[in-house]
Length: 329
Image (cartoon, rainbow, N blue to C red; front, side, top):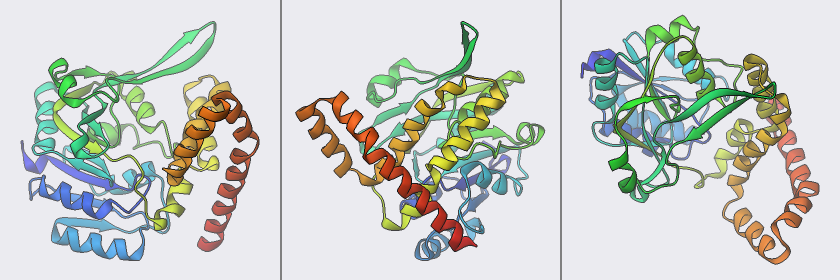
């Protein structure tokens, strides 16, 4: 791998409490002369101080005026990239040795525009697959256009999946960690900032493939995404904004208009982002809902929650966003 061919851009995904440990891990497993750009995204003051200590002279930090969406942060960092490739990383991932070299080698040897690793989920020791390639394309049935998106092998043990997979073309890579040719990203005008909180990876990969570009899957590169929890209370503001009703609806409306797909799916798709917000309440929320479902039946519990907890939580989320806007103002 030519170390002068790639730059890392690290951005906030949904919280800051793992960012220091993640940065230390990335730096320990990345060649020292690879440029690293870190878009801070308004972390708590103590976290920011520890990030700067961990990064030292290896990392170029960029501060922002308040919270920014992941695609906004990626575009901010990409403006400083002058290498052939850029690798975007979220601020809550762990990387395996040779992770970066394998991505660059794949791009060099195949000429692919985008290369994604094998994504793992949970703790490192869990060795559980999050995605080993996937699908992202539009299907039309009875005049209705919808997106088909899947994660191959999700939730399966890594040791069982590895013998089944090899480097090859795929339809989907995720922004937990992905290599992109810088020239391509400039040609398409950067990443779509109308996508505030979801579907960014689907939008980007479909855009690349519609232009005739290729997305490759490289299992020799592995990274682990740690799904929340854990949390710190200082994560609540950004996490609530990242998965807010406002950002979710604006994102999905923009995506549906851009790709001319069925808008009737928006309420259903917003359920996923709502569930993401509830991760802040785990394990209390999950344990309670499972207990209630066993006692009263899942369908009845869901109906009760849709009329009580969901509206209350939605109102609290909107109130928190107003408080954030007043603080910024």
